[in-house]
Image (cartoon, rainbow, N blue to C red; front, side):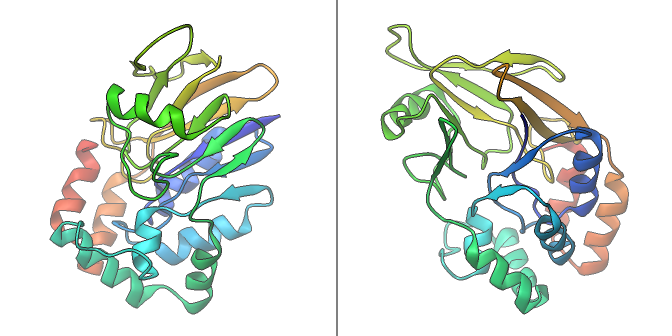
Length: 243
């Protein structure tokens, strides 16, 4: 079986569709949270996610904020503006769909799924080796898939290591999964690794191989829709720089 691993779509339907087309062949979609926030297409993205036939999805911090399940005090001013805009524009049916997303970590096939981290599934960022090392004590599976940072990354423990090692995967590279790992596919809708293309991964469960990929999409058209919607210029500008 092949799993399509995606995270942080952030209301960017063009990037979302580009990934679904580029991925080509997969049996199951695993979504690691933040379907909305930042982008101009929250309803389109929720509708598309709801149409996927085989899906396991969890809640992200922006999803939770739109549902008033998470305070926006820690968000910057622009992000708070977009939360309010998203609340005003989501249909009741799509708000209900977001409410159904699990806010706690899930386990499937020896994999823990969390948006932020296994220790704090909604909010914590796994950005460095120290944070990753601490989080290995909060899941028992061989692997943990996370999102939230918008950065493709692999943290490895095991073999007597006292601290996790960090690897930055190269585009189209295949990584053999051996216990124990924390892996992040990067962001579909708002990458932050200086590459504006949508990021995602394909996991071949039989071969234990994870392939990290990128998909091109029309960034300028998304930026124009954001301007038309009156969304923050800072978020518009960062789309083209991948930051």
